[in-house]
Image 1 (tube, rainbow, N blue to C red):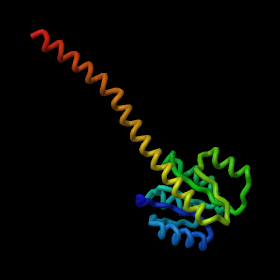
Image 2 (spheres, rainbow, N blue to C red; image 1 turned 180 degrees about the vertical axis):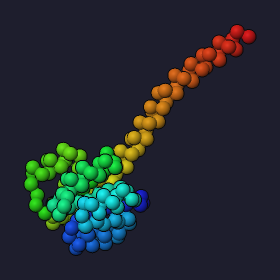
Image 3 (cartoon, helix red, strand yellow; image 1 turned 30 degrees about the vertical axis):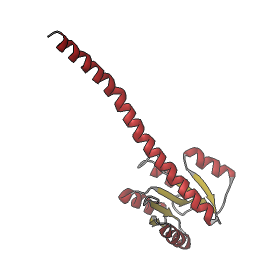
Image 4 (cartoon, rainbow, N blue to C red; image 1 turned 60 degrees about the vertical axis):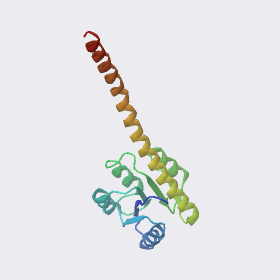
Length: 160
C-alpha cells in the first residue's frame, strides 16, 4: 500500500489540470493545482508538496523559473517538467539544474504513472538516507564520548 502523498500540478491549460486532478486523485494522491507559477509558489509555501509537476511554457514564469524559485523552499524538491515543445537542449538544461524528469506531451498514461511513482520513491529514499546520515553523524560523536566517559569512570573506580 502506497503512502498518501501530496502533488502540486501547475499548468495554464485548465483541461490538463482537470486531467491530472482526476487521474492523481484516482491513484490516491492529494492534488493541488495552480494555473501559473505565482499561484504555485503561494500554494507550495502554504502547504508544501511531495512532488511538483509543471508545464514548461506558461505565461509570466516558465517551469524552469518556477523550479529555481521552489528550490529556495526545498533544495531537494522533486520536480517533473511537462512540455509540448520538446527539445534536447531544454531537456539537458533542466536535468542539469536538478529537475528530476522531463515528460513530453502528449504522454502515455502508464509511463506517466511510472514516472510519478519513481519520483516519489526517489524522494522517499533521499529522505531516509538523510535521516540515516544524521543518525550516523550522531553516533560518530557519541561513541567516542561514551568511550571516554567509560575510561574516566574506570579510572575513578579502579583507584578505590
